[in-house]
Image 1 (cartoon, helix red, strand yellow):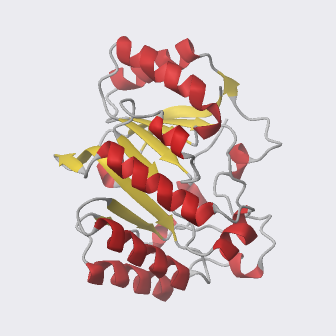
Image 2 (cartoon, rainbow, N blue to C red):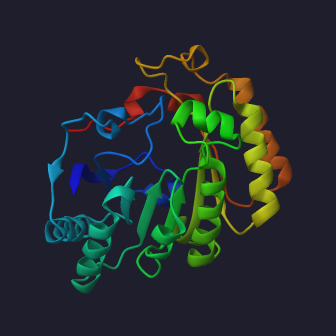
Length: 264
């Protein structure tokens, strides 16, 4: 496995980062290649960043993070290393890993992949990027993203159960993230409506992110600007009106590159 960063991370949702941070493992590479990727330094096909880890070495690193007091182990974009990740988690749990494990992914997951994580993952944290297959093809190069992601989330929820919290920290459940893109807030509201129709107010947690940061290589004019504040507020108001019990939102200060980790 090739890994770009292993460290406590403070910039996740409050129920994940808490006061001591999330023990985050950023894997190099990604099964998607979105044109606006916020972590393009490590996700691109041509990146040289990262260090190779065996299953045993990564298990030891997870146990070290646990000793440092992090609230969970957070596996970021691990899909393309999944067989080795599964072996790693089994080793780590056998050696004393007890804190929750978070599977932080793009949402573009097969049913077989999600099912293979049953009993190993406590918190699923998938993205849901698009309602429109036109947008998913345009920005991520895959037309089947919406239904693939919605189906993956359904399976994740069936494995994890409804969200469980203790002292403000998430212990288990599914937390769905959605990054609202400039010019696509109407698509965002369709996503929110579908999620509510399928899960109601209590069965999942929802995080609506305003942190979109234009990257220098983006070629789509609509993606060269930050998300307008009124578009974000309209989307949040829609989710609030529906009545989600577990809803996380951001302020405008999130949309800056300092919130993107330094990879080395």
